[in-house]
Image (cartoon, rainbow, N blue to C red; front, side):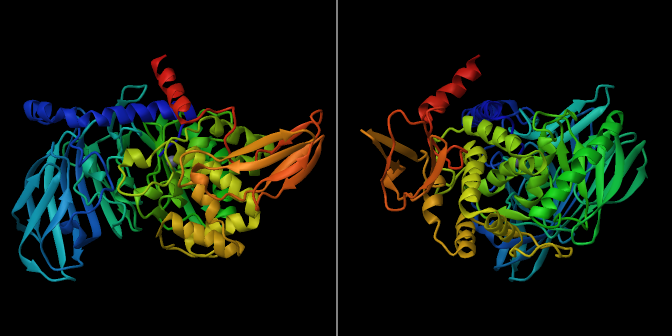
Length: 580
Ligand SMILES: [Zn+2]
């Protein structure tokens, strides 16, 4: 998901949480009002990635087909969603999810009308007789209605029905937290990616419909309409599937990948902004791709496209068609941070996907850290530190980055998975060095550190935090579990305590739950730098009270400093800002 400057992010995130926490109160009003696009979401629909039911676990999604007509004036959609399942265990039913505000006219199984049950957003489709493991089942759901309107996309997601400056329809979907079932029938879980997805979108003539994958053809449809047929032939999480409709110009260029392949760059910009989009490709997209390919490896979806589409919301990592709604404004970082952040997710999120929501920092911590890493590469150390310092000031330290048990997507997207996740990586990089850091990162993504010549298709993989830790330990030949134990699994930051006793200072780490933390720290005394080895606990150094003592002069280590408060104070700060 797009991150914004720390405080703005917190504000928006908290408002999204507030909206969602109100859902449980709304059951009565839902029953009274009936379903409209403004009816609050059923919690089961509004929260993606929750544990799969027993029925859902028995069927693996092979492919999806979505054939939709979009009616912008009515803010309505209608069509059919087909799912091809292969059963992994015997079953007499399969399960899909679809927001209960849609009307379903019929459901077919392998071409025949089928019985189904509908409980809220859960569709249980009866197969007739029990089917054996290995059987293929094709389910088609014919539906129509007004999709849930986003309260604050992309953070509180849904459909966005907007207009361009010249008054034309400008429409998008962004459903990372809520999931695909907000507008199409799907499994609604990142753990089961379809191998391929066909998306056919019919829109009024004059508008273009842009989505994931490769545009196969466009066709005139009676009634002054046009259909856009897309095919995504690589696995993708279902929350990544997005509709984007507007008066677009398609800008097509190519990029020579590090692996030798020619990768299509496709930017769908509002026609009035086409020149700005061309400039963005020239100034930003190419340099950013080159950076990512050099430090990580080939752009993962080079046999599809490196796609960007202009949207009426800020941005989202929609695989092969990243949403871009920042208005082409050059920002203070010296490059387009939004484009860069969403592009990071093609690797962290789409090529490598967290196994569970608990590991969401693998998407967002890396996703955020890649921007200062790029600043360092492009502009140097001052630009790097500027971004790191800014993200430090936004840390909350109220919840651990990696929590145990079942978490909601709101809990998973705790703001610290961004900044504190990034600071964990910053500290790790300083500790283990450039080579080991990027090597571990490449292994996390591709399963090998030797990535430059990997050819398409490149296989996506699931990962969890433990795997990343074991990769780091294997590559470095040392055990860094202690670093992750304190930074990822505890809410509070470690604090380096200093005690002046006459002509000496004793340094020691104070950690939550007294966890071991042998983190070395540089200190500078009167301009002379030395490394404190804290591996055996407290260490005492001769320092006169008149000496100039500077601890960690380059802020290499994430720790509690008085420039940010503890959790409660940080929370109150956000609340006060909200009240202003
Ligand atoms: Zn993100």
